[in-house]
Length: 381
Image: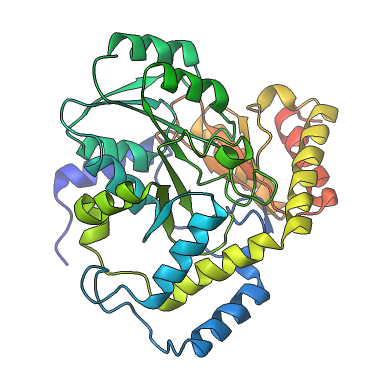
């Protein structure tokens, strides 16, 4: 096989020198503190069986969508799923994309126009930033969850159409913005609010509906992006908004138009995941209890100063230095706990961290044990 061009090989070499080379992990049977499967839905027999039954009942014995949704791939499950998702989220419409990445790239590359302005939280996900790079609009980032800095930008550019972009749960820090105040600011400057709810679906709200609805802000938020590879345990994403936004995306979002649709099985799994969410109060409560227990234990073990403040399923302990954080992650893994190190350049240098993802299926004993081990490895006692 032909070798990599030298310039590319040198980039890999720099990653190796910085102890930051990414490699695909092997499957393990360690205690899961790494996946985004907050409610254990990815292993739900109920969802698996219900999906199979739904496909049989609707005579959908088909392995693929056969084409893009605008050509031959718009099978009947799409309509059923989008109607259900819109109703669940109290939105006028839902449009399913193949992934959260596709949804964000599709939205931000198509909706903001030349002459418009995008202001986004500096910790917004890479998929949002990639979409913004493809946009013809100008963009500025504001300091993380800093509404004063946001208002400074809004006041300076009040003559144009502005999109304010944030997340309801930030994927690396696990914290949430003051969404009520942010929406008030948006109304003051007539800006359009876009919220990525990827890590909130299934986690926040009375039935896992996300932060926007739990605060009853769905009428004032322009668009929400919900993704299904986390709390719903499957794959795909949807953009929630008005019927006119859905029509616009169908016509102009390239990541929607120029890709083969999801299979009937994939979309039926999303639909059955939502059905399960309606009935999963006990599982959701168990997750909330585990988050509370994790926070109590990190206080008891004097670990609180290491952690970013979070009441979500993501808990991050800042341990600067790729070498150090990888070493502690390896020690935890050797003791049977799957905790991942997040290295620079994924996070800024000096912000390297251990990222604990909490689930409804983790036991309080496992949470206590992993934090006791962390305390031992960090403090040496």
